Image 1 (tube, rainbow, N blue to C red):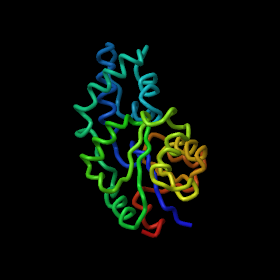
Image 2: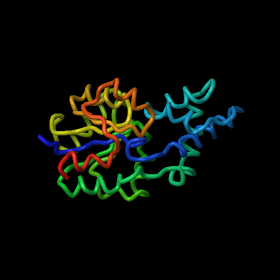
Image 3: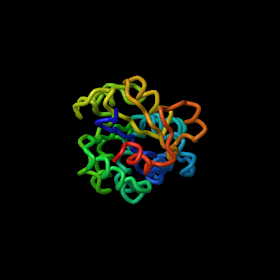
Image 4: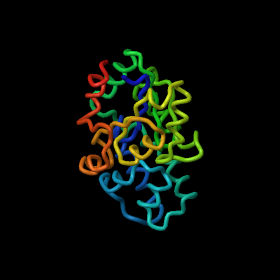
Length: 213
């Protein structure tokens, strides 16, 4: 049966936000007297939450102080350093107009995701935007997907989760939700294939056709 709802990761799935994230990471590194990292060096650590990102990208990270530095800086680069991936807007509109309920479940701090959703023109397509602030445990725990299902009013077997990382597979499996991936994020296509999602797409623009929308 086709799903009644689709829940999405954000970074690497719907948007290329890596320049913005790298800029804020490098702001923290500069304050610690450390040289900047390239976007690709930062990219591979994105998706597992801000504490993990800082632990991996800032030597001797002070998680409380560095998280504040990151959060205070990030609004200055959030919009300019993020763009939707190709055909994301058209895909989400097709799914929404086709009667599917849509939500975002991302380890990105929710205020940043909400600001981007507004700036990128996705608000009308989405029923809910969830972040790590909304649940006891971030991904790969199933909490965020379970809460997302509640907000959308659907069962796990009526939903699909779309992400870009192996962590998204673990999250969906723990929540009992089918999971499709796109190779546009932090993990390589080879790593995604080895992790065996229910389907590996070439790009998000295949989604509407595959769901009959």
